[in-house]
Image (cartoon, rainbow, N blue to C red):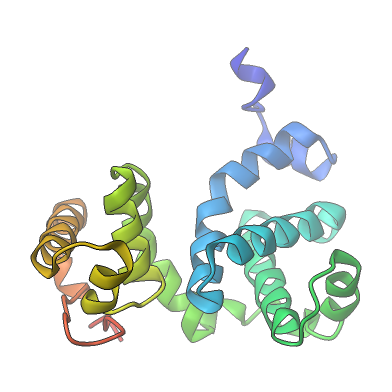
Length: 200
């Protein structure tokens, strides 16, 4: 049964327009684009919907995608254009498809966008966050991806400040282990409503 969901040659299948390949790449990059949009939109439902729209647009124009790196660039660009449209109150896929034409020239440079660079650094957190218990995952998403202060998270979730700090500290410890001691990239800043990435 595995071959039904994991194409032997996913890229070739993608270029042929096969749905199993689209599912493969959605599963592979969904969280990457979702967390990028979550930081921009600060709304989980909107981030999920906009992520789907970014993928749908890629799948509709799969013949334009040159390779897997280009796929990632195009997903980010679709997401950025969709975000800008939402700031104007426009959410439909046809409008996104039409508006994208005005941004296609940014296809080569989207990875230099500061928010994209930041999100790529944050990828170190994604697998860890997805494996957390539900409450800890909420804390992580609010702190790292929606940039809420520890005080705001405590009020929102009805938890003690000490509990919030302990959860975040444990996440940072695990990230440090995963990065081979590079947890200094992520700083715990209890009084700030953003957490700085010392890499920038």
